[in-house]
Image 1 (tube, rainbow, N blue to C red):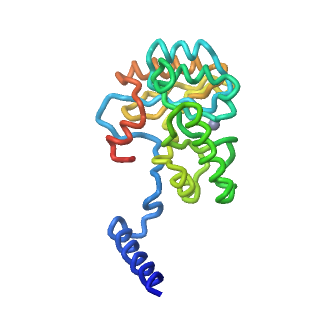
Image 2 (cartoon, rainbow, N blue to C red):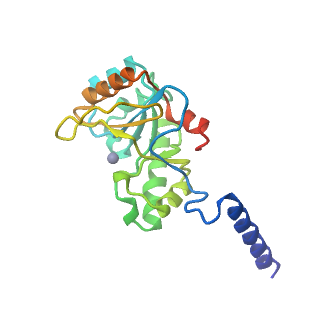
Image 3 (cartoon, protein in one colour):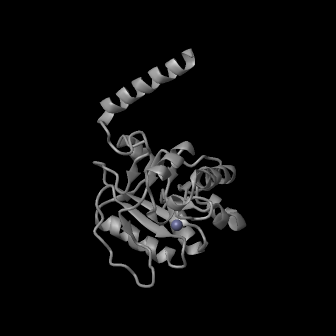
Length: 226
Ligand SMILES: [Zn+2]
């Protein structure tokens, strides 16, 4: 009996604490969803998704310019050519990239039950940690498909923030118009055959705006988001 009373007391104080933190605010305690990082520094964030195409020219640019990119990789897209990616990360190679979570099989996470979400997000975390020597802390949900259940599942898999993007520089059919980048913007690229050209356009746009590519995690921390 004392156990259920203690539980009730704990729940009561929890709801008080939540109330004090921001009454009835949706998503309290869940990882934030970030499409732009508030910062006073002249930085921009280069993120590259999936991992299906392994273009040597794109890797050469990332390594030569020491771009601290954030790579949201699918374990299946890296497993048949792991060396391409291990070279890009500071943990396992000479590069400055960091590997983060993009699920195991790129589903719309909102359509899966709790066990399915867990298998996709925790499964990718385990596989990427085994390959790259570091547990991912950020999740990019495929198709930007997102709700509070996805954020809850992500939190249970160690995700500190859900990261979307400000501008997509990927050439999907036609080359997109190049936007004027602002400090804190998150640029989306993909490991496609046009990555080298898309990356170069993003780096040129950053330079034109007086911005430097920066690693995401330290700036999320500085902004108080993680
Ligand atoms: Zn993707």
